[in-house]
Length: 535
Image 1 (cartoon, one colour):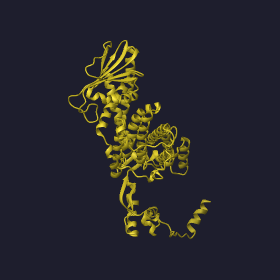
Image 2 (cartoon, one colour; image 1 turned 120 degrees about the horizontal axis):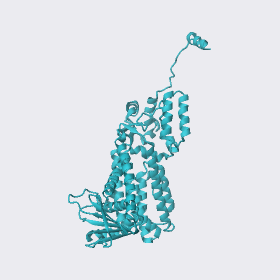
Image 3 (tube, helix red, strand yellow; image 1 turned 90 degrees about the vertical axis):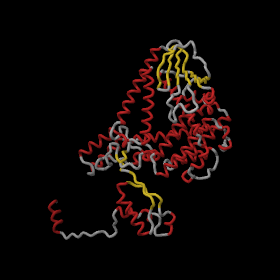
Image 4 (cartoon, helix red, strand yellow; image 1 turned 180 degrees about the vertical axis):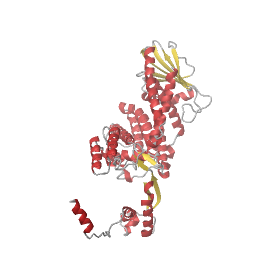
């Protein structure tokens, strides 16, 4: 059989002819900017030339240069005026994705999900076809079992798109982490849940509710309302700047910060009392602000999450029984900085930042000492006490307190209480009552060296005191045991996170959003550890 084949090969007259109708891959790809739009018919002028070309920097010569040459030669125009290049997409270990390594992640698998068994079957098929060697097969299978023990999570295209945008597009290499896609999946779910909360609140207003213009009810807006709208104004400005400057990795970070930390963690939590208690006037105002915040945010997010935003956009239209000015969020006008500049209120943001610092301190103390629903006292100068009194229900709800009482003037501490002092940080001390009534006192005093913008103390704020206590007999030993347990947990988490950040490939393997989140976690843990060690 083999001999016959060899004889046929050497003694038969073979002639090799090149097919005259075959073009190489890059040549045919170079025609895309104008061939897909009807060239050489006149319809081409409706779409050509393009404004921006985005592609990988490794194929700049193979594709981009050929598109430029053919476009200029055949149409007389450059196919695009700007080129945005991204780095090489690599796996989580920094290796180039390749069939021969068996480490390729198909975007469709991330969108639709894939079981570990199916992943192994695909890898074994590549081995059978000769793409993967025996050694690489074992390495690839072990890597899959280690990285994806439960398979690839179904994330959807919006979460995948946000994950890719969160990486620095200008970096030479991008190490894709599956956990980033899962993180943004949770973010999309967070926005969806915020929408559901709004829809349930609107249902309490009856059928076909109508929302007033913000300008008409501006005088009736609360401090928290004005704070959220100011944060939204800043978000609109940031998103426009990120898109125009091509700093795309800051775009999802800004949206995530607003939706999670400001809209959901603060505003929605503080608005729950108005929704649950069904105060009509307050509920209408809250729903109006939420309507503006959600409708604006989804238009900001739409370029990155078109499917999620389209679903929310249509649901809002149906609920309000109102025809939107645009049939789709993809054709809706993008929010502009000029439209929102009048709602920027830096003084309100700074004051709310101080209040949120108080809330964070109260939460840490309550968790460290195992308190459930304690009462809290705030002592401060009368000139600023009224501001905190307005936000007392918000502080109470966010910090999970039974009651918040604002004190001013030279009022004395409860005389029946015995205190044990502990240091929170350079700005604060904690005093724990050790017998009978269990009481915590946080003393925050003005630092003579001044404070940076965004910290607790600002110009015009004097020293103030926080008292946190609960009734009942709480043994000092139980409190100390809870504090030691909390301290050990924090130290372990801090050491683990710092080791992770010290890794040489930390920055290349983690997005800007995740790096910022880790920095915030480390700062928060160090502050609480310092307080617990001083107690």
